[in-house]
Length: 365
Image 1 (cartoon, rainbow, N blue to C red):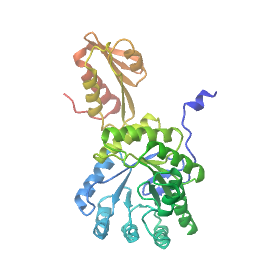
Image 2 (image 1 turned 180 degrees about the horizontal axis):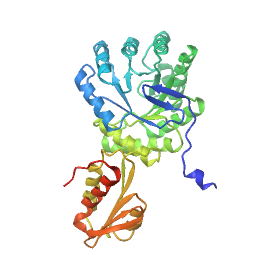
Image 3 (image 1 turned 30 degrees about the vertical axis):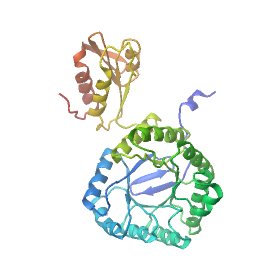
Image 4 (image 1 turned 180 degrees about the vertical axis):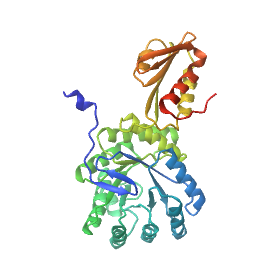
């Protein structure tokens, strides 16, 4: 066995699609997406929330365009935001046309509810003329009726066939700036659908588990489903769908990518799970350090360890770390113990060192 190959994820080959300043597919970094929860008709709230998502590390933000009034607000939103914006369109193809005219960077349509083929062609023509890509977004909640009758409600075969059938309509018009998603609320069925789709086309894939759930359960389900796909090399852009503040979607997505070793961004805190050997109050210490360093963009692996058995060794595997026990603490940097001090100084010593290594300010006592 070639051990080197088992330790790296080989990405699926896909064509490249440009969404504003972001390149999707073609081996480019996997981009993180999220969606505003504000009423798009409230321009101020929508702009503010989109900016919060971008600040958190989101690279593409999707807006719901639910009616003509929302569509009428898109030009002003576009004027205030120069980052990649996607219009989420259901039922009314004219809303997609309005979004393209407003200068949004991508359109998302659903084959199950966008309507007749001629409407899809109208949207495709406008997108082609404006250089705007289209995401064909299939999910279990809105499949075409004929495929529902043939396969049933949540069958991965229905997802794949719906997506490829819609892509064929776009291809007939010589349009290939296509991104595809096939989302189920089941991690297993999403995995099956994306795996099958990945073998049948070379379009970039937007991966996600739709309606994944609340912050805790949805994070777990998304991590299982998306992590499995990413480690198979499948996925060019992603959204974690949570019933929570969408900023959490971005944070979870970043952590999934870092855990799959597909993104080196910000602080990664590794900490022991604690056991009877732990001699310091480790849980609040690790949580505090993670919270206080969340804003840092410089990639850095930070270890927070609590006993003398595995702590020092694990901390040496990080860029910088601390290990405590018996009233004393150690600061370990690049595999070497650089100082020893009182246990009460563990957090402040580590945060000071992170500041020095990244050049970014941390608010702490």
